Length: 256
Ligand code: AMP
Image (cartoon, rainbow, N blue to C red):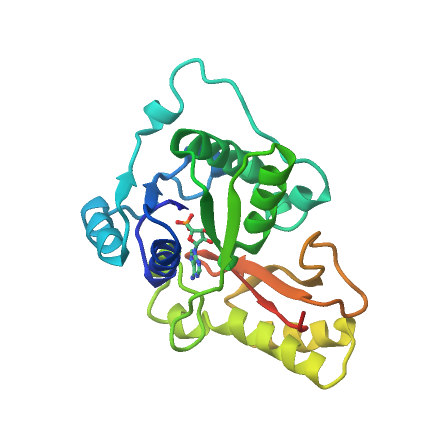
């Protein structure tokens, strides 16, 4: 289970699933500099190794791997793993240059170091999950990628290490991502097509002017290409910025 630490209920759910299905669970805690674009929060990303170690162990981890950046990327390090095609160019790939190269490179290294049978990834980072699936299949990594549903706060906000950046005023408004996704799913249930459903989602986002959307889209669940008609498992994806933090979320809006 690759993580960047500052563990919350979402991470712990992954660990618990992994512990239920496997003899040993190795959790990596590594804030990976390669996957942060210039100007992002690499330096200030929250870190608390002692707390993480306790929580991970309680959830069923047998070993924590917490390498230093110098161990992972010693002087002379020069290799990048690049997943090509539209899957990495859109959405997060467009807003975070180099992000998926950083993810693909570190995940490949972690798989080679740990040699796991299975690796657990949250649907919270839905595009990342699809990129890692592509990577594992294309390079015959021999690791089964297991998706885990999003764990949310009681009010619907997807759990994230970055939620602590939200101010007291922003925190209740941060449910706007979840509510926009729900509006799309409800519109789909009423028989509206994806375009009309998106309008319903956009109307919800417009209620919170502090939130500046990067994108809101209805996409194919594997390719992440926008869809004009409902397909099984269609996903709504959303991302955007509050003054203090960038948030992402997604939801299945059409049954498989
Ligand atoms: P991170 O530490 O943010 O890199 O996340 C490590 C793993 O935990 C990734 O596979 C994430 O998708 C997953 N994860 C993070 N937040 C959640 C959540 N709220 N629900 C489910 N999985 C999550």
